[in-house]
Length: 274
Ligand code: SAM
Image 1 (tube, rainbow, N blue to C red):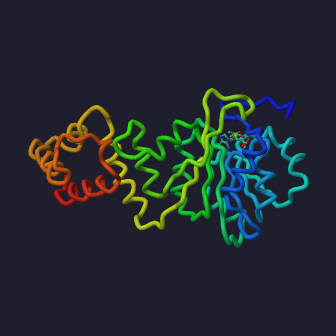
Image 2 (image 1 turned 90 degrees about the vertical axis):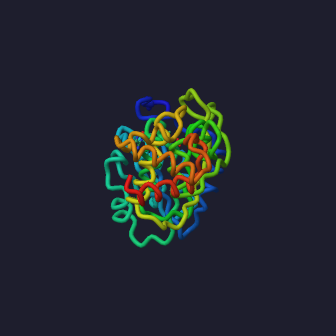
Image 3 (image 1 turned 45 degrees about the vertical axis):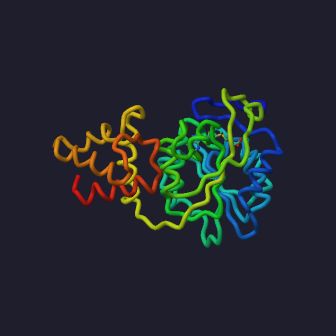
């Protein structure tokens, strides 16, 4: 790695601690029948560990200047395929289906480039792919938001969004000194266990639209944030009435509502065509 100049703009903080690399690979639950998808291959520190445990690895990497390093490092790993390009601009699912034929079981692992954490989580969860396990390294603060429960300061749009698709869990914290170059903040490894999908993406997007509006200003009560839904004062009064009916109180704030309560709220608003 001595000659490679890492690029801060691409979130290149490479994981150097072999013990943590092994722990992440363990969480992916790989075996001879399971393929691994890795987003952000970097210098392939993690990739080689994944390749040793899985049937095949398909990695995505934006930075083609890493090619000489990767050719050397992956020379003895014929089961590793790498697609170079921006994973957010490729057709992610199609690329996986075209590169990996006859998949029996699939896990996803990513030490996420932090500048695109949310878009990558959206990409994975909305891909329609079913993973055995999803193991992500994210900033510690983001991990805390992902697992946050209502009535906490970390509970946010992202917490609700993730729970539409899966149960997230913080597995362990990784101190910043385990990376090269050393980033500003600590990280956490999280696993996401997907739920069976019972809703369409359009239904989830409609729910998330309401959640986003409700959280638009955290200090405001939901009814004030939801005033943006309509200019009609009668309908605004109806929103207050719905909140009282559903939650016994019209003064609640978004951070007090669980995902199930947001779903009930959406149903009522729809029924009344608000
Ligand atoms: N997996 C390696 C590790 O654990 O050491 C590297 C992780 S590093 C935090 C993130 C990697 O994602 C970098 O190699 C970076 O070049 C790559 N990357 C950044 N943006 C990307 C994008 N849009 N598509 C694909 N890869 C990207």
